[in-house]
Every structure is written in structure tokens, then in C-alpha cells.
Image 1 (spheres, rainbow, N blue to C red):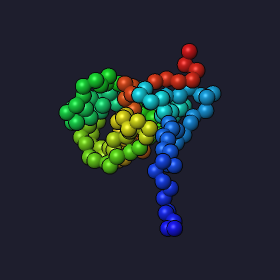
Image 2 (cartoon, rainbow, N blue to C red):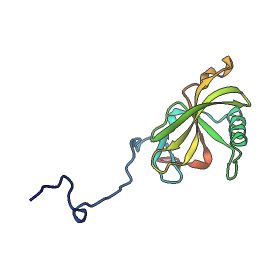
Image 3 (tube, helix red, strand yellow):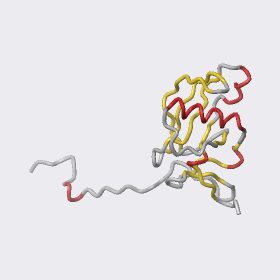
Image 4 (cartoon, rainbow, N blue to C red):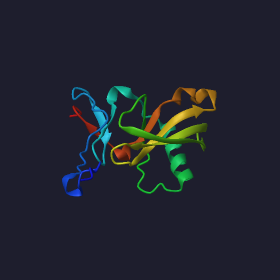
Length: 145
């Protein structure tokens, strides 16, 4: 009898569980994906809620020609988890020319915002390597009461 390398189809049981790459500690206030509740960032990593990011966000959606459903507000973070990054592209935002890459939730694949890869204006260099996440895609978890 010939041995098969693959088990018969009736013996293969496919399961898909929702596991995240990283879980943030329960003792910290966190932000999670509003669509699937994957952890995204620790509150300690929040840099700013400033209006300059709102301007960049609006310009981003106008550039993409799809700002339907956008709440307009976004937060800038030092670091994030459970987030994938697309290819960088140059975009002229209201705060100047930047190379940015769209970021998305690794679990549900929703586009969340972008990562600043490079700022061409010296006054904007502090944004490099930082992440913008739109509030419409986040929910507060753990200890916000």
C-alpha cells in the first residue's frame, strides 16, 4: 500500500481562533480596535491629540477620495501593537511633504491610520516612526472609568 503524505480530508480539522500577536497588560489603560477588540496601544504611548494631526488626517482622506464615515480626530502614538504596515508613499499633507504608510489591524485588516516614515520639513521630523490612529477605529479599554 502506498503511503500518503497528507492525511485524508475527513481527518483534517481546520480551526481559526482569534489570537492577537500582543496583549497589553490589564493594569494599564489601553486602546483597542473598535471592530475586533485587538489591543492597539498603551495610553502611556500617546503623544498628542493636537489639531495638526486633524489637518493631516483630513488631507489624507481628501487625497484618498474617501472620507465617508471619518470622525476626523486622531491620536499620535510612539508605538503600537497588532498593526501591519503597507508600503510608504509620499503625500503632501497640510503640515508638509511626508512619506507615510497606511497601517491596519492585523486581526481584522481594517485600515486604522498611517505611520510617518519620513518628514521632509525639519519642523516635522519628530513625527518620523510615529503612528496616527483615527479615533473612529479605537475603543478605550481597562481602567478608563
